[in-house]
Image 1: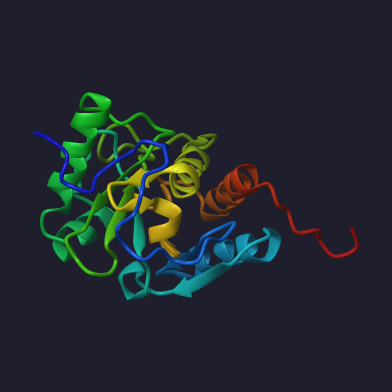
Image 2: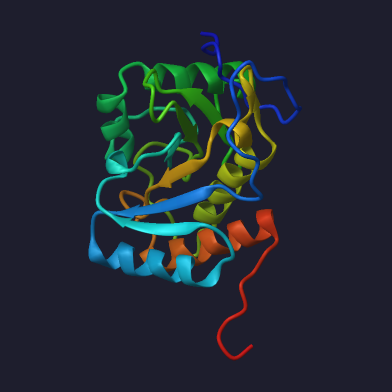
Length: 213
């Protein structure tokens, strides 16, 4: 298998034949939740980080975004949870992910890394696959830091990544992100939210002061 045209995971600059979106220090991040517990946890991220971070109570597929996040497994299989939803919505995206994982990572994408591939749709045009577990259906330990590693990989991909069409940050204005490991992985929503906030702050280095500080 080979990666689909437009798929890339490198971080070198590339010229773009498309009109870029305005250059911004951070993407717009829409944190999506289909249940109240995760929605409340996501709200703490929007309240405590510096940047354009919002909460959407509903499906990630309802968000107008240029990229969606797949909290995948290391092999690129998309057979359960939100990944299965993506595979149904974007026929061919699973093959694109698996091809990219093989082409750029020898068949296994390490946790802490991400690939960005075409969805085959006009919008969202891209899917960022960032594994939260090595094996499909794996239950994660309570002390796991995999949501942090996956979120950091997503944010680094936006900040530093490039595609044949240009820099990821020029092509992607809005990223829609579901819970990372909060489904089959069993990660507590509050833990996931803290880890996503920590990853955002590490990559983008801006922290909004809390009230009274």
